[in-house]
Image 1: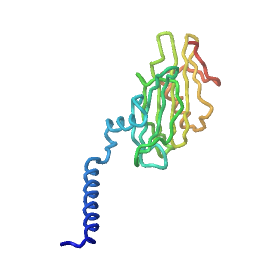
Image 2 (image 1 turned 90 degrees about the vertical axis):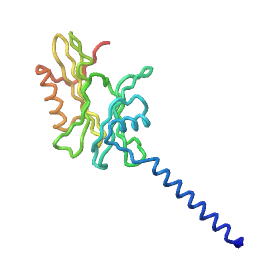
Image 3 (image 1 turned 135 degrees about the vertical axis):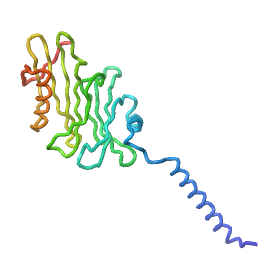
Image 4 (image 1 turned 120 degrees about the vertical axis):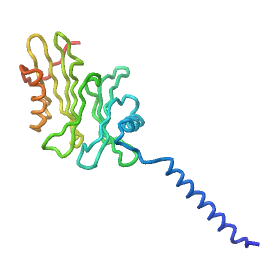
Amino acid sequence: MLSNKLYPLIIILFLSFLISCGDTEEKKKAPAKDYSNPSVQLEEARKLLGDDVKVTFLDNFDEENESELIAASEINSGDQWGIKFTSIDISGEPQIIFETDLLDGSLEDSRVEKLNLPGKNYKLIYYNSADFFMGSGGGEVFSYIIDFNEREVYYSHLVADAKKVSLYLSDNINNDEVRQYFLNTFKRDFPSFVLVQQDVVLDE
């Protein structure tokens, strides 16, 4: 018969074996997430931020990480309506790095794309509301360039009416590449715009 002293050792070895088997099974059940797959990006962003997330982008958006996940959300709840952009660290369990305030705009019929400026060694996000707020008698275009590394949101606002087309650029634009990108983009569609020093707010 085995000595009573051996029983605890046998039990410990048996339990260790079960635990190691459980760890192996767990690893088999949870493969690494393929963030190159857009559906995986959207699923993980919505787990963290909710179903308001409509669009995602994966790339290098700052100087610290190889790649981050950017989520674009459209908020429409109670008295809150607008868009928001969030950078997410995906090196481990997804977590928020930076999130913009709620911005004027809609993701419907808009342009949202990655932007590469020569003076930056990482990507930015460019947003343009396009024709969403424009009608036959005029309207407005909201546009943003978001620098997640600097945690800055650069803003431009074009307002068109029967008299003139006004373009406002936010005061925090101290990068000439950002400024020129806004100006060149609007010049293609609204060559007669006039730069204004104060933002124009349309009457609702």
